[in-house]
Length: 335
Image (cartoon, rainbow, N blue to C red; front, side, top):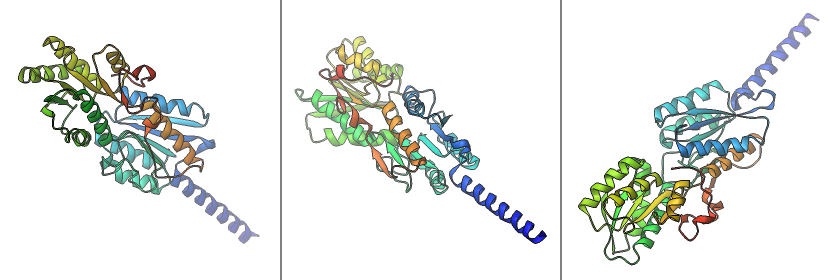
């Protein structure tokens, strides 16, 4: 009798241990709750705020889904440590990542996938190659975003349109920070499109700082050096607002075509007012909705891994906003 009792106790302990190991492999799932860690490059940025809004929209459809938000403050080391802590905690069945830089996150993501965590990324690819929009980490569920190289190509298409009747056509390229890998990839896409057009001359590259004020200063300086400037193309619509102000101060308003990035609420109005010519479309809420839905499906054993979804596929105006079509577009974030 005593031997049978001991054997029974050992069996219970072994089963309990196995259950614990199973829980650790995929994160705790108390009472059926799906815990999703939301790791944002920044929680104080209008783009990522819109991403979070999209994530919450999907989560609201599922009473058992809980989002926990982490703010990396645009610091890669902070984000790496947040992911490591989440991995050790075994709390999350899924990670929604808005990377500051996808490369350094790769080892931790691989560890998470090996433990059964479902991982999805938005805007910035997770993995070593910032130009590759296809899922680079085996087992990662999804990446949703436009991609920086094709984004640059869309900006290039706007430049070609703006320069169609100008020879030479002098262009100022106004990225936020020219040395950032994502800006280098975007610039390569831009140059890929405009290079075959011999009438287009990029006469200057200046940092716009992702804000209107530094873009105003940079554009003012370039206009003094290149008074015949024809086009300003920027990696952010907020910088176009500063560029247009510089054009006004220089008496060039209406004589320079402005091409922005994002198709924000403010950019739509600038285009309608004739102050901006084109904008490349971004849809952050849609990106997040796609990723979070895929993660929930994956936790529930549905869907597949390795998905890439271009969030612009659902855009009613395609990838480029113009005065002819911008009225049909509902922007998803502010400059």
